[in-house]
Length: 206
Image (cartoon, rainbow, N blue to C red):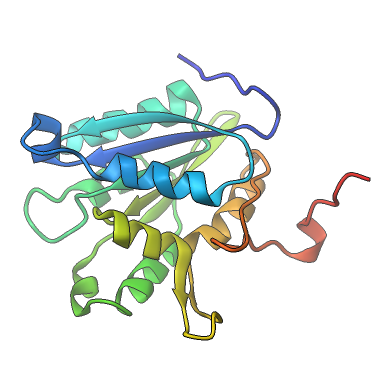
């Protein structure tokens, strides 16, 4: 069922936690609460969320991503989990299978950020893609599985003096959503500053 925007800049978000054990109830899911907690801190613009908790099954992941973009009309879909090298980590393959275009810079920057903290970041296979249908497009991003790593990836890395050492990937998300025809997203700059070229910055109302 198509989601309805409550106002023109209402961001329609899909959040997907991918975990065999969490989906089966073996332990409590941390991915969805971690994503929502970060978004509540970072977003100024209005948003609505559609959540899914699913196992590491490629067909299930593909169906879920298609449902969120094509049927619900999400502008942005964030997944968490299933991006490592084990045989059950199939999130990148499923994401690429439903994509119309890849956005490789997102995956590159995610690994760049994570390498500031752990050497095993090179094992991550996270991807960013676009899925485009007639009259609609969405950005889909694979994120890490742990809340701390999710926040680090989205926010980036700061030096001791507060200067930015590595930009978080969410800094580029609002302008990407602009370019594919989605709503205008504003963020809290103390969490992550949305970057736009001067020509795309919206003037404040008088």
